[in-house]
Image (cartoon, rainbow, N blue to C red; front, side, top):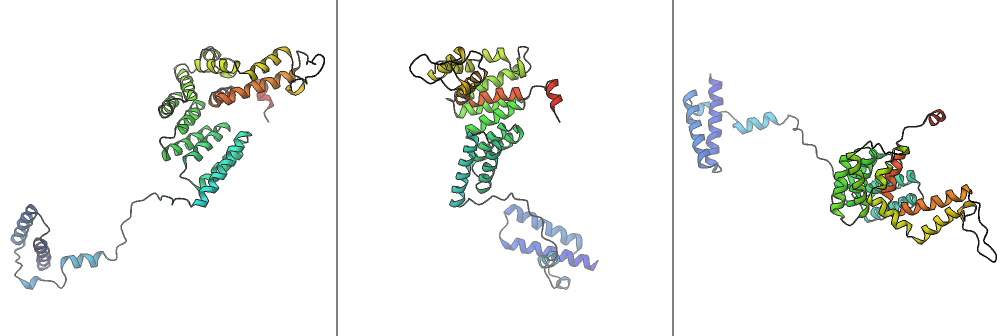
Length: 321
């Protein structure tokens, strides 16, 4: 019982010290005074009884008892990378330019490598992630493209191109409902971008009718495509382009020689390739497709993704190793 009284004495002494500190509110002081009276009554202890005093105060006993305990676990903090040095930022920009050059020549795998190196040097630039998303989409890695777009948006929530490329990747993954929301956000940030507007309409049509009975070869909805105002506006604009008109005239008249080059002009009648010259027609068609690609690359990419996703034919399956 004596040890209990000594413990009670130490607690009462500690409470008295808190009362004398002057750091408590009036309500807290009143509560402690009541607590002291209760302890003195319960243990029949008085602070005037110095025989119950121990060599150390209660706080000193507590600190000595806890000194050898391991430190409490600290909350995990995600480390933030230091801002890159100016030299790193310049090198990252050079790598991004190299990646852009590889995109132009359709070497998409190399483009991904350049953009990844740029990200390593400067992971705080949303453009690098967005560009890598575009390259990943070209490679058919739509999941990787989605992840890159998420990172880009996390860095810069106002970067419209990241939302547009996210929409493109989601459409390719047949997640049309989600794609619509991202295209809407892209349009909200860049309301004059006709490409986003066109792609939004396509995603909405796919969301409403994912399996159209008018789908043509490769799963392309021909009726929906021809009724799409964005596509038809693009086609009408292309058909008024003098270069395209020349291409179409050559295709119809067979006026392209081997390789699709226009015949040399000179005295006498211009030589013409026979109407059945397949190489000339193919070359002219490729040039026409390039014109469409330049006007709306995202729309063309969606058409390509639909064709890639078509079920393989029996003959194609037989050719697989």
